[in-house]
Amino acid sequence: MDDENSRLLILASGSPRRKELLSMLGIPFAVVTSEADESTPPDWTPERVVRSLALRKAEAVIDASNQRDTIIIGSDTIVELEGRILGKPVDKQDSKAMLTALQGRSHQVYTGVACIGLPEGKVLVDHRVTTVTMRALSPEEIDAYVETGEPADKAGSYAIQGLGSTLVEKIDGCYFNVVGLPLSLLGGMLSEFGIHVLVQPGE
Image (tube, rainbow, N blue to C red; front, side, top):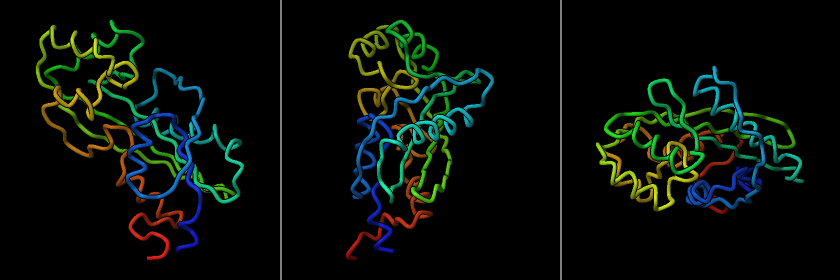
């Protein structure tokens, strides 16, 4: 399987968090930022949203890959609170509204992962769900957190791996899923393409 492990991986995301997580697997990869349209119909389920957008992001960089032996990885994360999907906030007021709604309650974080193998065109799409419980926050704490700028580009307006960790009381499920890339799920998917994370070339 060592020859398979030499396939180039492309992460179809400009997210520094996903880049950092993927680098933890110790497999060389390139980053190609996906400019895919992220709009979805309002009646789509959270599962359908993250799975569809993950695949859409991966498909958007196929032409840019220029590789005959490549695996493209796309991913998308959203937050759901009692049937309401929370994406990235549009401004500070939106961030404050999201955090106010989330505080003191449990919500679900969905992350979809899509892998496209080239040149054979094999496609795998899956997702994970993690439940996050946020502690009760004062309006002053919410304002202070929003002013740090950390929530600006995060689904649900918080980053569990940053200052947002102080807002979270507990999680049930994969931590990395909340950060934006469920590594255990991805590792299993890559094995379907012959890439085995724990067996590197030369071992």
